[in-house]
Image (cartoon, rainbow, N blue to C red; front, side):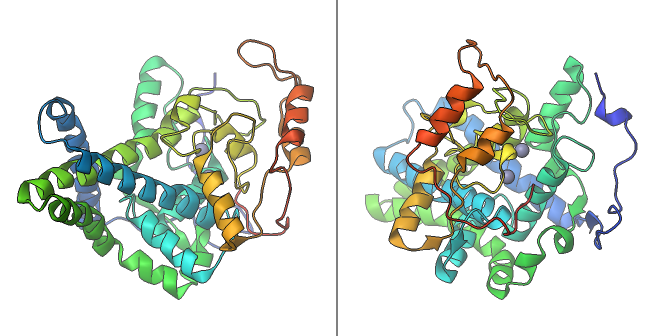
Length: 354
Ligand SMILES: [Zn+2]
Ligand SMILES: [Zn+2]
């Protein structure tokens, strides 16, 4: 089997025709240190949460606040950072565009422009040299896969090399409002950590209520969403079903469908990256797609790229069989055509990162 690390050195310079290099220098010591703090502090809280959960300071207010901020910031990432800013799956009104950038930033996964640049680079080089977070980087032996899992899950964020936003996100760099939200990332991090504490304190009218809300709805919530999002990069490139042809190892991993709000239908996503719905088959729950549908009905978004059955059918593996061997390509095609939202309201010429 191919060992990725045995292949030639990464193409740090762009192929002919690309004006911009893939990387743009290195992160500073301060940036690296802050990334470590942002990753490790919520993780430590998550680990500590397990023993604390029983009999210590977890009330309904904490659960409610944690669920609210989890849902809000998760959708900021899935609907905003990912489907909208990275892949242009729909058009949004200016107000909503800014709100999506703000709410996504509150997930503490980095500023919007860097997030989008990294993710477009992931699609451009998925599971090949140049992918910022492929679990297949070290090869396919068991030890290499453990290292690869760690790298894809969180290790890649400690790499000093920085994705070149001039090359991968020029559209966002050209937008003054988005540049402003990008610069406000430290402030938005403070807001996302402090807001639950303030609310918890006010609702319970106690300092202790503020402390427990900070622990559960700020730290534990951020950590949980971090790991769900990163699992899409790690687990969903390792384990699951692969009904669609893709040039990479992306897979649909159903156990994460709800927590990731539809993002774990990752093989379908790589097969058709600009599509607004990732759970394209019947029964594949995709909360983010539902939210986009509601936005569309409210008139806040337009030109939504809903799944196009012919297009998806072309990308299905021939004679696809699932684990139980019962689903044929024809059946899947028929099912895609029956889906209530299988219409196409976008135009093909828009920005799409394959
Ligand atoms: Zn992927
Ligand atoms: Zn994507």
